[in-house]
Length: 77
Image (cartoon, rainbow, N blue to C red; front, side, top):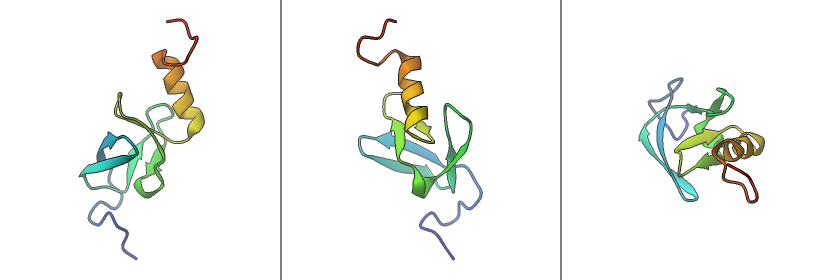
């Protein structure tokens, strides 16, 4: 079965993260979570930062990245 990211099976993709979407720069099957180091299948990717151009495996990893960056309301830097 072919997926929509042909030619990238097993390889890490390079993406440009946009508001509500992403652009595939280099085809691949997955990207790596910036917080956990875990692979994320491109067709399952839901969380990323446009500002930092990072992908996250889940909402918790995304929240931790926002905390690390000091981007939460009422957070001291």
